[in-house]
Length: 165
Picture 1 (cartoon, helix red, strand yellow):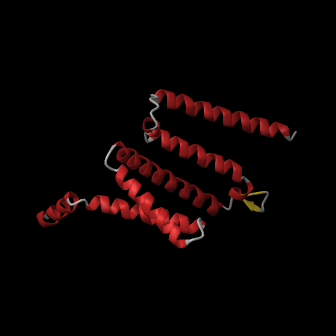
Picture 2 (cartoon, helix red, strand yellow):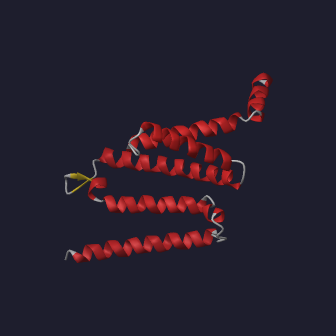
Picture 3 (tube, one colour):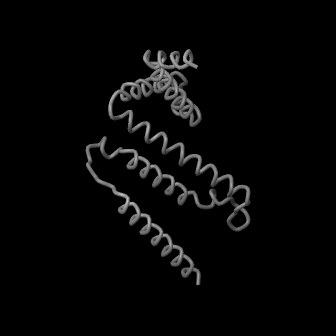
């Protein structure tokens, strides 16, 4: 085991972890740009991907590295949670009015939910500190905000039910 351990330590000392970070960023950005077909030129997608990969590599040397690590971890956890929720909703055949899937029937609601999750991940990963805003978010404040959101959703549901009657 000592041989494998020394190999890994030597690769890390040589900067192999930064090479993997660069490759991962390049692959993800190029894949997303290709999936949405923006821009139309393949070479422009490649250049944009290279530039963003180098920017991530340059940022990995400072406090941005901790932020990127936190935000990527949070996004992965949220993505898995959303995938599991979608799988359960599709398995149960949840449809609105017996016709449309629930995501197609309420795209604005689910879009807003994803936007709120994205902002929460950004704030939780320390994005406000990178912007220079020193806001202390404590656990009691998060609990109060959670309860207020639940209350707002409950009031909205009750008002929605009474509108039809």
